Image (cartoon, rainbow, N blue to C red; front, side, top):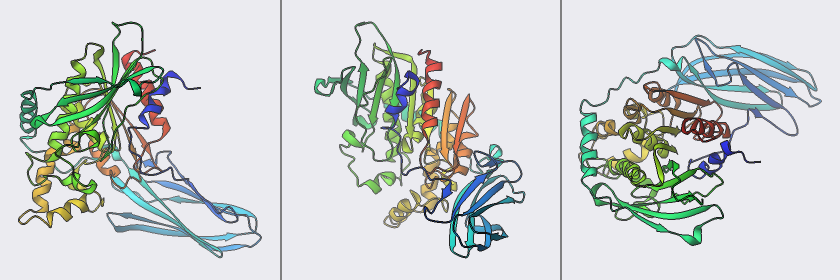
Length: 433
């Protein structure tokens, strides 16, 4: 049975950008030897030192000898290694305990290796040491607030020309579907979708979920079972049905006009999100004090930025936000850094330092300092695009009511438990019972 508290998360599956599937804790061979790695903390977040248990199972009729070992690395450098001898009888198993040395605050990659008579395997994980004290060493620009106040003033000068078009052929038994259009920064036409529960009370007002898109994702209308929530999905400029003049190849969007901080594509994209809040607040059937912004990956980043720049947002949910602590991403992630560097090589006179200077105005960490509404955030420790150090550097500076869910075995994704929490959290705050 689908409960009311879970309905919204069945819908959010369409919003959150997932790039993989859950990795199992066990490295199994159905016909033979397998291993199970267990962290001493359920989230692989520790105090001074981490500890693990590495179990080797031998269901075969052949005794196994060799070693189990680990290797800790950080930023590509070896930190510590150790091993234990293995002497497994036939049809037996053994657990090996590893108490790792004390380490400074930060995140570390760890490989556990088993090398025995008839089996070799490596299990790769990440763990954190005192991540609550992580702070970025890079400061936001002194004129960060002035930069974004200017962008907001330019947006306010653009007449939105809101347009709502019923799409009756897309309606469901319980929801009406509308195409929405509006003018944003630089008079750019952006589009999205709104679905509203069908009800017999013309004066009823609905709380709002504003779903923001992942990178180059075309958001479609979300129709679900929820009876008291309007759902708006926004396609920012250059994406989905808002492509228009900005119609780049997929890999080019992230660096479109990045050489000029005043014309970088993300300036308009973020203003598109604020214009969507303007749209919500212009609708008489929507609750202007019950607005949740939510998204994953780039959508998580946009949720952070929107909540930071527009205090009409009441709740913020960011999953795996990208572009956080951007100066720290070089050497830690391949995307988007490699694509940006590739573009720089085609632009005479443009340097990586200049791009980073521009990107400081778009750093998710710098937006996070301004988020004052209640917020939840979800991260995966194995995330190749939003590494945990950068995510914690962002989360730790959020000043308001906040909660973080850590998924030690996930990459650029979150689990159903996050969606369940988000639904209960939203309903509690919006009194939707």
